[in-house]
Image (cartoon, rainbow, N blue to C red; front, side, top):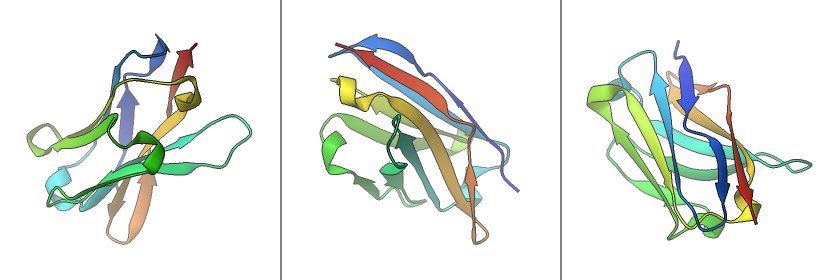
Length: 115
């Protein structure tokens, strides 16, 4: 099993930055796929970005060039650096980890971007 704990959400003005973190309860050396989803009010949950164990990254078009995903295996932690935030980035952000053919989810952290 893997437990994921997110941190770093909050309220920020448009154009500002936030860094989210997701700490796993086990070594992420053994976890291949990790990523971030978000869900805005009234909308479906969507994939924002993902990173493999080898460091390959993918980004949804709305966040390309603004968000950066990374992982620190020594700290069992994944990060999401969010720059140039927009009001439409407002959502609950969830981290995920794919381990032993099962997907694990964090509890979510709220990000609110004011205009």
